[in-house]
Image (cartoon, rainbow, N blue to C red; front, top):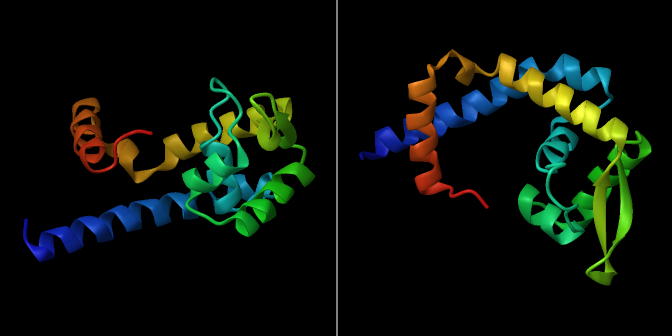
Length: 139
């Protein structure tokens, strides 16, 4: 791959993310959320055990003070609750509330409908997923 190819791929990836954030702006505003708080909801899979604050910071690539700020915003809106980690009583986990699950589901559905990636066919999406998982394996 040439430097120009890599630059173009990085630029396109960034553009897709930014356009998706822009297009979902109205739905975020309806819930008084920001792209950062939406991203926090996105990485909290209700089918998995509640993540620790440390795991959330790693998933969001942010430091503890930033995560505290994001968590406070979500908590103030009734979307998450802090709870004691049953595996380590010294640690806290973030638990989606019923309202948090509903808002998360609504916003993810909206994001999937409006993202520029929705224009790809199923086979194109599978190929893209395969390529992206080579460079960013699922956690």
